Image 1 (cartoon, rainbow, N blue to C red):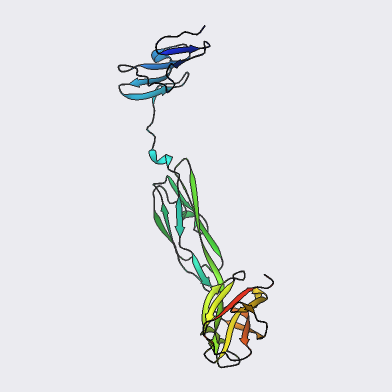
Image 2: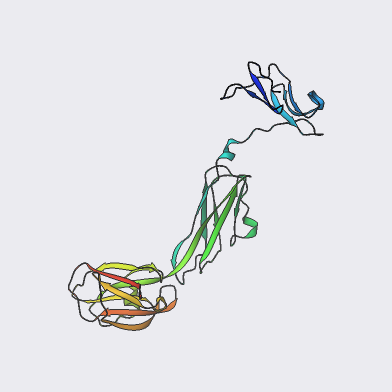
Length: 270
């Protein structure tokens, strides 16, 4: 039989609820009172208590201990960014790598990964930081990472050193170019899968663009139209760092006088 008064209603002999749909606050007047569970009340029971203003709890057959304050930063999910990587020309050797990380709050742990020497990977508690991997001598694609933790959640960031081949373009009155003349052309680091587009003025000279043979065949567009008539030769190019790579040297069949000629290279058949 449910009991009803002006404040509480007993529901099916199972629990009490307030008569107000929005509920009510509960005040336990005074100090050093207990909220127990089970069958014993007071100090010998278990539950929660006020110890002169310090809230404590006790598990069954346990002891009374303070309820620790919760660090509000734990409710902010950790984030971290890592810099220090970059793009380099194949053949370069990067002796030292300067890593820098930024966290959105103080972290309990901050751990770097290989190739950082194992003795230097644990960066301890803190927020932002830097580390220089001295004597790294990186010459191949390499990724560094950092994992941070606030004791509850973790976050990871990476930065990479990538080594690419150069793409060259320009004009010349000559029907062929030697190695030093190729290196003197306009240039940019590229990858095989990238679509390449550049603007060039004919200057009354031959148009040249030179790309690694390993990138495969390319469809060549001039001002939006496919052009198939080019002079093609395969030449070894030695870059300033001593790397030797075979390149496709592509030259226009006649000298050009136009300005702002847009040339686009796409993977063959795309």
